[in-house]
Length: 302
Picture 1 (cartoon, one colour):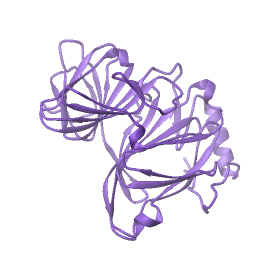
Picture 2 (cartoon, rainbow, N blue to C red):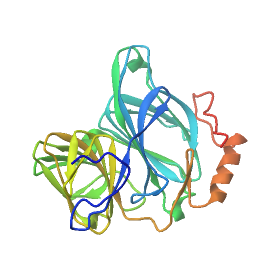
Picture 3 (cartoon, rainbow, N blue to C red):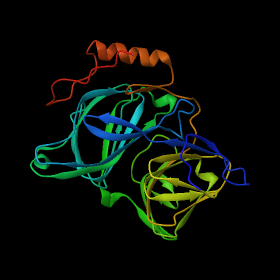
């Protein structure tokens, strides 16, 4: 059975109640992005408040990604690439190339500005860019913390094999693994490669659990889900993911935050007052500047 509409699905007699979101296509600096989270009906999966899938994009020589300086508050941006590279610059003075398999974790706190571009060397040749960017909401006590940036090479991130599923723990703790990435609340962010016929248990003890299908399909509670769909699994049920053929999947979630979050443009906050203050700061040019950059992303009018 295929599941191809937004909404809730009772997939089994064991009270499975899976919230399903289909990809919404967006243009980001000329690139096609699957924006699958948040939704109007639900804002958080654990601390994860935003999820973008940058579709595989072939770049000819001379082409590249160019996202100009833009601000963030109240979150950590998490960038993980399957192929290609992105040059990150921020108002802390950081300049870091994030390559395939690496993790870049930027904590905005009370405010940071960054740009994302294709570096000069990669613009000289044809390249493929493909990856995930997600946002993790900061706990309320850390919303106004000092900004920070950390980068972890692919080789530093732990991997394991479980019943035909290759797991790479990008951040957090799960399945007996722990990532070196410093996080601000209990969470997990995992790349999973399923071989044909493989399965993986997703215990309720992991906390809130999200599943995004990058390619292929998986079956949960008797229902088959396809690439581009995000599944928010029910909190109180142990479930198994299975794949009849090869599948590429991202698993994420963790402990539920004590408070809900508001999301407006690039800002995440626990109150409208924090969002209003950030809008005023950006409009008045009061956020810090990114060394070596000129120009900035305009703020939406609504």
